[in-house]
Length: 387
Image (cartoon, rainbow, N blue to C red; front, top):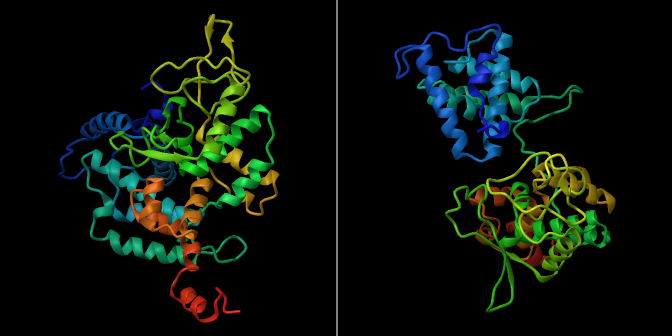
């Protein structure tokens, strides 16, 4: 693939080393020489990139780049790594303020590429379990530059955009192109619990109205947990949200194809594998005069979703606006659901989570109001706080 966003660049990183060789002494394994190791990695990297989401490829590429940079600066050959070498790399990451979730990604990436090269995965060595446990203790005891506790084991969670937050943000929007687009984006994110990368992939053709009930649904052809499109994934869309979608379409002149597009300026790259019709309305880039052809249609970048949500949250004075991410509407709807009696399984289905673990993590604070102590106090005193 020519698009660097879809390339793993594993060998490029190895060949960029200045102070050490890419592959050190190789013991008797399925890989018998440096050439064998590099050939295996070259073939594997191409196949891995073909079968994974762009975000996954980008994450592995970035984590591998971090490991390569550390190896070069400390004069360690990246391959093969011993458990001691992997531990030293992670100790450096701990000192640089990295969190446990990032360390887990580093371990995954280094192990993944070792196995792809036909080399032993250092994270599967019997010594690794105790080393990882010790790293966890180091993270728990870590302090920041000011001497304050900085527990790197704690997961940082994005702020939630609850239904009331979304309503406040929508109320503050007008009829400009930016306002109409952002209103449709906010309302749809809240209804469907889509991740930011899934939101920017929504097309006009994905909306369907049920003949029997008149209700609207959104078909999600691909998602983080349904990358091959094997599941029939449909999300509920309320009528008021569809009205906002149609208002944005009408104002922007969007009849088909990608729904959420940048406003103003020429698109910089194409998206998808099939050509999409040019956006001819006010939000479009018009035609490319140098070629005499319509400019290609692009979707918003996933990172732009977070910026839009944060900007709109700041505009209405939400006190947690700084913590808003592109997943905040998803988190907020999950909390709205559990606060209104939905089960974890129902929320998991609504947001197409692969397991209940993330649902529990996102709704832990809301569920605290429903635990055994809270229920006892409510029964005894008729209120949540016993007052």
